[in-house]
Structures are given as C-alpha cells and as structure tokens.
Length: 164
Image (cartoon, rainbow, N blue to C red; front, side, top):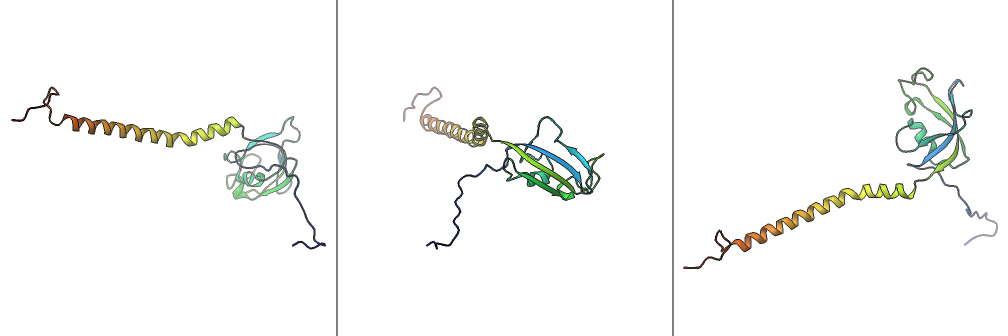
C-alpha cells in the first residue's frame, strides 16, 4: 500500500558497469600522496586498456575500477599493500607508497560471442573427454567379457568340443 505523499523512484535506464573479464579503456593520472605525478595518460592520443580479473594491474586498480560506468570519474587512494608494496616501482614510486589515481572510464568492451563460445568450449572440453573415455573403456570391457563367455566350451580353433 502506497501513501500519497511518498516519493516513488523508478529506474528507467542504467549504464553498464565494469566487471571481471571486461576490457576497459581509461584515462588516468597517477600521483604520490604528496601530489607528485608519476604517470598520466591525459596527454596521450589514446586511453590505456585494462582487462579486469587477469591480475595484470595492481590489486587497488582491480578493486577500484570494478563497477565503474562509462563516463564515471573516480579518485582512487590506494594503500601500499594494494599498490606496489615494500618494493615500490623504481624510479618513480618509492617503497610503501600510497598512490592516488584520478581515473575516467572511457569505454567498456564486452566479451564477444566468439569469446563466450570459446570460454564455454574450454569449460566443457574436459568433462566431455572424460565421458568419451569412460564410454570407450565400457565398450572395451563389454567386448572382452562377451568374448570370454563365447570362448568357453571351444577348443583352440574356436570349434565346440564334444562331450565324452
């Protein structure tokens, strides 16, 4: 039951959000906590590409970019253990540095139908091979046991022996 003075919100359109295995195109500026910029893609001709879920970027990016929508801008403050840790990334990022990234998601490239089919094929390949192997071994066993039953009561040439 709805009261007349209540606000009603209906979601009519929602942008797609970044999820694992999506290829993202982002523009970013990376800074140390003191404000020194160590990397920026704002001056480059094209955004950089990042694939979520492959572990190719620091964990802070994996977590911070997840759920972003195209056109969204985020400021990610990444603690050392989710960044480059105690090793840093010389010469620009010292050990145990907190990193600050201004990021903008430009595009999300979804998995194509071919990629989905390939992934499904890889997933189903091993159970299918196992089923074929079990079927083959079962048929072989069946032939061998059938051969043993029919060979009982025959001589070496395959002829039935006479009872004496």
